[in-house]
Amino acid sequence: MRAGMRAGMRVLAVLLCALRAGGTELTFELPDSAKQCFHQELERGLKFTLDYQVITGGHYDVDCYVEDPNGRTIYKETKKQYDSFPHHTEVKGVYTFCFSNEFSTFSHKTVYFDFQVGDEPPILPDMSNRVTALTQMESACVTIHEALNTVIDSQTHYRLREAQDRSRAEDLNGRVSYWSVGETLILFVVSIGQVMLLKSFFTEKRPSSSGAST
Image 1 (cartoon, one colour):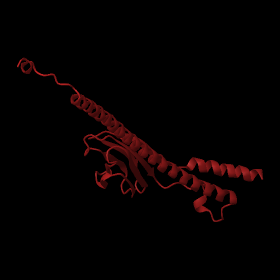
Image 2: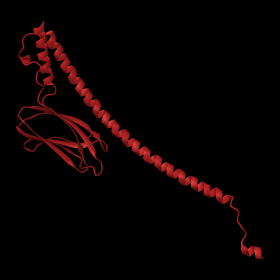
Image 3: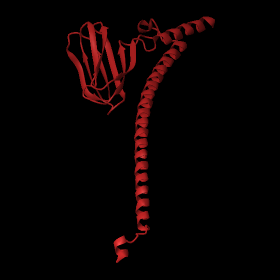
Image 4: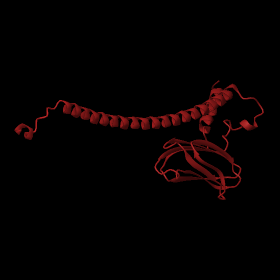
């Protein structure tokens, strides 16, 4: 019984270490009329996936392109809010992916991207060569691993949605505040004008001195 529990704990430890291996997540600020590039050296035959999304700024869009080590553009999109680009490398070398906000002259952007390299390794070291069925503990660990991956993806999705919605709410709050201040000033000016107009109606006009002499 203890041996089975120890084996299960070892499998669970491997499971936790294998979570999201070979991935990079980053959120960065992209000023207006600017471009930001990232570089990653990859072996030939690897699979990588680039997911990105604009969180705040302007119309929530950005230009993105990916170049291989030979300078050939293998992916290019303009004014995208979000996208996903999977690719298998054909040559070894440094791959470059860039985000550009050069088309905007005043909108500051915040961009999130997730760069995953390679296939996720199997949870169990000998899982690909097994000829026997998984034990109940191993099956449970595989199920937990898949559920945790789903939770991580869901948390990332909702975190980005929350940041985007918060930015929109703050922008709307600023606009409402400015509009309220403008309305207050207009009401103040109109009120003073109405008071002056009503005061002019009840002001007694004195006769001129020339009319009194005659």
